[in-house]
Amino acid sequence: QVQLVESGGGLVKPGGSLRLSCAASGFTFSDYYMSWIRQAPGKGLEWVSYISSSGSTIYYADSVKGRFTLSRDNAKNSLYLQMNSLRAEDTAVYYCARRTGAGNFDSWGQGTLVTVSS
Amino acid sequence: SYELTQPPSVSVSPGQTASITCSGDKLGDKFACWYQQKAGQSPVLIIHQDSKRPSGIPERFSGSNSGNTATLTISGTQAMDEADYYCQAWDSSTVVFGGGTKLTVL
Image (cartoon, rainbow over all chains, first blue to last red):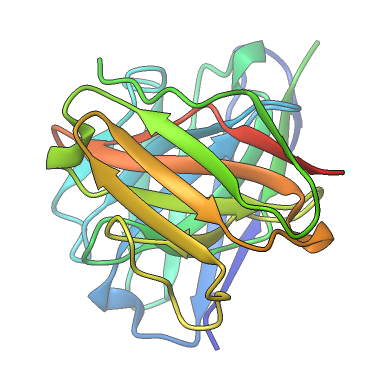
């Protein structure tokens, strides 16, 4: 079955960096667009970024543009999110999600918590 | 930027019908989908392309989308349906989520 496992979260100081990873299994990873979606404590879902199946197309939310970089390695079935210049408002659980051709997210990981605090 | 608006909370008695709305400019011209998120869990897709249910989602969940409003309807609501519900659509190659609706079954 489809499995998405995020890792790399933790506590980081404002201005610091963190790299999140998402390991995919149970499906042909290279066939799917993938995305990161975050959820601040007690808040709603916020889309962060998505990447096309080949990696040639990437979009970012305005809130992270210029600070976050999304990439993928189809040979390793992995998705990455490099987060730089982190701010307190980036504190959230970050979910890796698979995007279907219809534009919805049909599989989600368990999430990894990123806390930005001094 | 495009916005989707949901009521913060909806209450329903067990066995009754719950309706959760999602409003956005000309939302009916886009596809809407819905996610259910129970406390401490990851979101689960329950409705896609306005009204389609993924396999394994109970028939009591249905959706519609017309004009400026998409609606998630839960018929014969059960205690296990208590959760947060989020609508989602696309606008200009970006993903938009509604603010979420907490469904209370009491």
